[in-house]
Length: 249
Image (cartoon, rainbow, N blue to C red; front, side):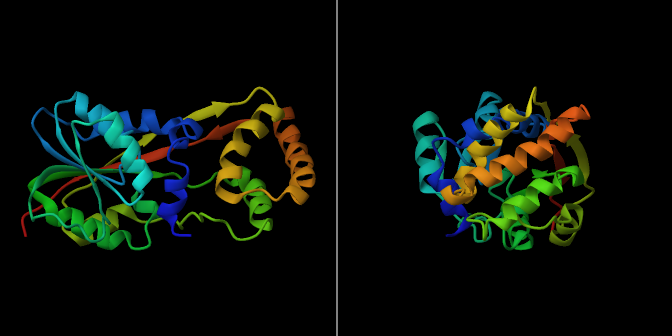
């Protein structure tokens, strides 16, 4: 299964299962410094977490994604924007055709993020803005959960290793990079609440085998109870934002 197929399958519940993306989309749109009339390309648009706030700022939006169901939902919800199925590493768009490109939680899930950044630079007008968000690495105190998931076998969707965004931007010809941390801690009142929340995402991305469910749950709750006893049952879904200008070539 290709990565976009995993997102495509869960298009109708994606933002429901990951409510953090709505706030992150607003943060990225604000960080980009949007203004009315700007030609904006939203790459890896999903169901519109970035496009919605950009639209309220008066931008002229083209949204692209590889997941047809994501695009179907986006076009239904926001008929006033242009929606196209397209690979960000091979953009079928003219040089210098956008003033702003936004990428929310995209670069760090690509096989070839360098190719994507090069293409983004190409379609930006000189002096245009590129702003992107990437997920912060998993906190070490949650490695036990990652290891438990890995024991279940190959994942349908496997996260990529961390990428060096400033280096990618510099290589593609962008100017000085600005960055900002967006923190999103979520505290859970008890281990059962945490289990219920994480299982909605785990079942979608890994399809927890029925024969392992009881054992997995018991082991999970044992770890979570120890964390809860220490007063530390908090999940961070933090992201880092990057912003840079396209230089003339």
